Amino acid sequence: MAFSWAKFSQIYTCCGSLGTGAYIYFLIPKGEASSVSEVLDRAGFTGIEKASVSDLKKLVAAYKKALEREKDDFKERIEEVTDPNASDEVIGEQIRGGCRRLTLGGDLSSKSRDTSRRFCVVPVTIEKTLEKQGFKFMDYSLSNKAYDDKWAANADRLLDSSNAPESLKKLRDNKDEKVKAIKTSCRDVAGAPTTSRLFNKFVEVARDYCSDKSGK
Image (cartoon, rainbow, N blue to C red; front, side, top):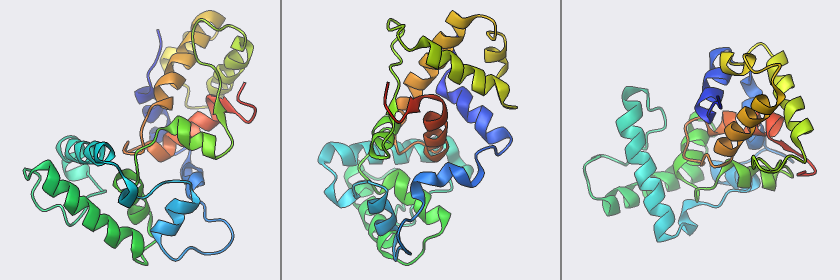
């Protein structure tokens, strides 16, 4: 009966419920930033120039997968990547070059920020990103019942919203199944990487329904 983090994407893209708030981790504190690199640095990300060989392989694999799956709807293309059939080494160097242009230039548009976040930083998960913001995921292991009341309350808040999925609505009066569903979904959200197209939206979802300041 559990619903996956893919369900969250349906919930939070159908009605634009996140809006500007979806980009909360990209808000620029203490004055204007002069480059996307500065924005990413302030948000706690590590630039691709410090990526290990394995990190770069992850970025190349994610980029190629996006080319294949998102096709004409792939908005975060890097101009320098000219041949998707080139070797991974070539694509990796092309991504590096494109990232230098994107992150050091003066274009702070949402497209530049999104492209840079997806492919120009060392990949990290939503869980790690929230930790840098002072939030921790609640324990989503199904065996730990200590915080199930909190989980149930979070599920109820989602149910009280206008965007609760039908799969969760059916569980409104079944606490155990309701808690299992939201724990399972939050576990999946926790592992979503920066290369995910909907990473920004999932950050907000995870903060609202999967975590708290105390990390309990």
